[in-house]
Image (tube, rainbow, N blue to C red; front, side, top):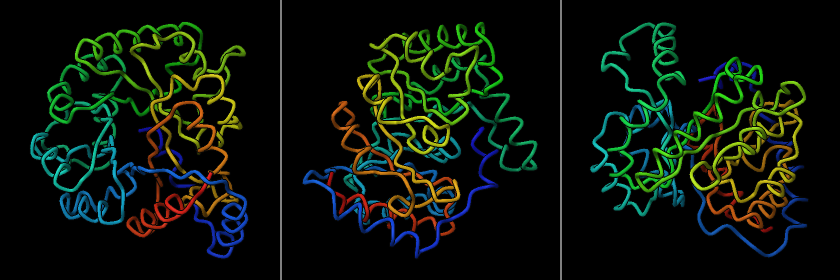
Length: 306
């Protein structure tokens, strides 16, 4: 839920800037292309809440072949078997599931601040293993390859003891997932790269967790926002990454549709593929027009050569 602290500051890049940035990148790209592009459904979360099936049908019609259900909505109360059948009908796959706490059915009736506080409480790391166990039936029905934790509050990794505790917890989560034929995963934000006594928490977790059961999802926007080089991370830790979030950064440092910002996606994709990454999910944290954003980002990546 930490991402919401950043959403208020996010701005879109202008159409003119998008055109200037897009043309040279396509002109100099090489010959490879992505054969399966995914969408993190947080991008269209409001549409999912209003029309779950219709939104998935629209996403498939755009050309997406993979989806990742968001922490904020998940399956929106639908039975996993029914959702899996719908995905099969639409030619969609959901290789990963976002870890969500067990929530009371009336949480949507609470005031927003109360609902957010309850979500944070029930989704705390002290409940991580319990929430994982509760999500296993969904994971089996959906055939997830990994259950991915979207964030850890930075206060829980503010010192060396916190880092060690989190690594131990991730390893325990990985062991639990491995017993059920999948992995545990972790998705980064920019605060995962705030040094703790000279150590970057994200790299500490990469170095102190079991590579056989714990994987990582590299968000290209947040790593870049933190001043990190995603290509270096892919070179150094490539085998640990199960996927990339394809999220662009505007010239102002805010969110942008993929291809309309400043990140070099041909180079980043080339590095990710070389590292063995095979899942790529478009994401925009605060699109003004969610479906238009999903469509524009897909079009860019479908046309991109790297």
